[in-house]
Image 1 (cartoon, protein in one colour):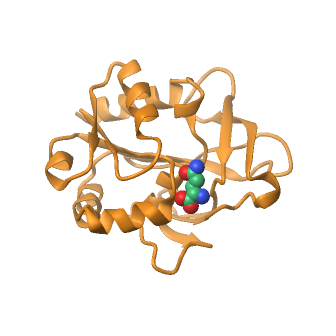
Image 2 (cartoon, rainbow, N blue to C red; image 1 turned 30 degrees about the vertical axis):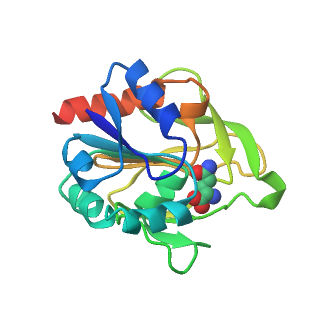
Length: 197
Ligand code: GLN
C-alpha cells in the first residue's frame, strides 16, 4: 500500500500511475493515514505551501520519523525539494523532511525556461530515455556520499544537470513522470517497495 501525500500538488496523477503499476495507492493527509501505508510519494506542486501544510496537518514529524526508519519515499519536483537536507533559493521558513543528503536549488532552470522538456536516461531503467517534463523544477547541486546519481539532463542549455537521485529507499526526480504516462519510474519505485516488503 503506497500513500500519496495529499496536502497539495498533483496527487491524482501519482495515484493513477501507481495503480496502473499494480500497486494499491491512497491519498495521505493525516498521521493515522501515514501509519497505514508502506511507502509514500510526495508529488509535484509548491514546496513552500507543502511545508506550511505539513505543519498545519501535523505531518512533519511523523514523515521525518518514518523516513529515518527506512520507509521508501519517492519525491517528484516539489517532492524532491521536500526530501532534500538543504535547499537553495527557498523561502527562509520552508522546511523539508531531512531525507536525502543533497543540496537542491529551487526553480533552478530560471525564468527563461520556466517549463521545458528534455531526454533523461535513468540508471537502472532500461529502454529509451525518459521524455522528462520540467515545471519550475529544482536541480541537484551537491550529493552526499550515500547518494547515487541516477540521471542527468540529456541535452539543451541545462545538459548534465543532475535531476534524479537515490539514497537507499529514497528516490527523487526533478521531473514529472506522472504527467507523461511513462510508468517506468513508478514501476521502479513499486519494485523497490516490494523488495523491501
Ligand atoms: N517550484 C516548485 C517548488 O518550489 C516546484 C514545482 C513543481 O513541483 N512542479 O516547490
